[in-house]
Image (spheres, rainbow, N blue to C red):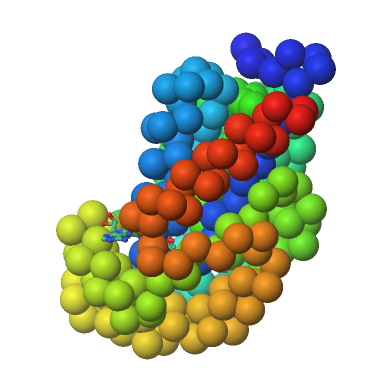
Length: 217
Ligand SMILES: Nc1ncnc2c1ncn2[C@@H]1O[C@H](COP(=O)(O)OP(=O)(O)O)[C@@H](O)[C@H]1O
Ligand SMILES: Nc1ccn([C@@H]2O[C@H](COP(=O)(O)O)[C@@H](O)[C@H]2O)c(=O)n1
């Protein structure tokens, strides 16, 4: 059931930055706090990671070799089509992702139109077609060594990885692709947020900006 009225439109905010820079934490903090004010059905989060390409046709030995930090690993066309559909008041079925399997799950999440959509993901600002759909673009800037330590802990605890695999992947693709694609996309951000996911002042400014945009719509 669409939650947008005919004369309401949707505000899309993208939060980009390095892996483990604090994107999800900022997105979930804004989501929880604004949900209380706007109502549960008026705000939602979409993770770019849900749009990693399906790899069911590949064996596990092949899937581990994929470069998950290159824009080609993402189905950005599907993400753009979902954003356009949501803006037109249509619901979408968002893929669910399994990091341990390096593949999409068989299940999807039903996502209905919202007044505010928060996107978060490393490569969002690298794609002009995604940038064209955004009302506000944010880049979370955190030192790479801090991001690496957080990623090591998170990937071992939550994503079924060994220390060796995290270190090898970081050297082979995560750091080089950050330097080639993610860091240069900072130029497209409206706001650069330092100090990662617990920057209270930045979160307050972002919430105020979202509320201001909602008033103007
Ligand atoms: N400023 C911060 N201080 C301490 N821990 C943080 C901070 N920002 C993020 N984290 C933690 O680092 C980990 C990665 O953050 P997350 O938001 O998931 O990163 P991303 O979505 O950018 O990959 C999480 O465990 C999160 O709680
Ligand atoms: N099968 C996969 C898919 C993605 N990754 C890594 O996830 C990172 C992006 O997610 P964040 O939550 O950290 O922003 C990206 O750097 C990929 O390397 C993976 O390891 N395996």
